[in-house]
Image (cartoon, rainbow, N blue to C red):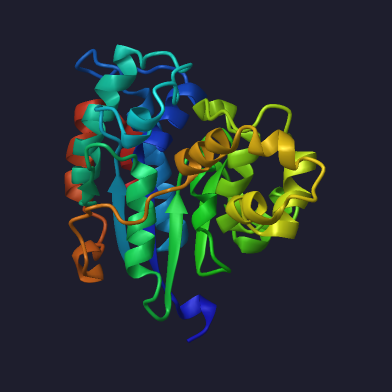
Length: 291
């Protein structure tokens, strides 16, 4: 079966899309006087991706409000981020109903992030022949899951309509030759300010990338890199580097209650459901897109 005949499984990082819409779009208020701009953006994104990708299988994943295991092992994880405003939180809660209107099954697991659930779904289904997995996300955390052209990540360049698709070659170009599964090694050394992952002080991309290329992984460098000029600097922060890698690495063994791909089979677009839901939120322009 050629690439054009492969069936598509679409995995959606719901929280990252809602956050993207919240910051990219002007605020809207629905007929019920509740904020709805992010919901409008999310619905618009879903209609576009369904039209473009025609996935046979689809599901979405949410973060939970409880602290994750990352917060438990490193209290300062994401600590610099301001608390989500109420007008964003209310739309994250309402987004569950939006996915229900689309008849898209959603999952969430306490203690884990949506990215971990996506990683688990990829692990569960990646060996199915003639199946392409597309991850739709508002950030770059899932790039470490990309494999060849079979597992790709679609994210946004600007706004909510201009997207870019990362296959393995595109990931290598972005990270100057590193493979997707080496991204966590990279972050173990340089950190990730967006998540407050510390990395190793004084180690930037110019040092980390050639080092990882040569030694393949952070652990192998720590074990065999004694002759490298940066060895002492890095081993001084060995535990912090390994912690940083662990924080950056997605967990692909979550207790995800879906094992059979048929559970995620997409139905035809439920137009009556969506029209009713869009009318409730005042999304007249979206109604015209599905009629």
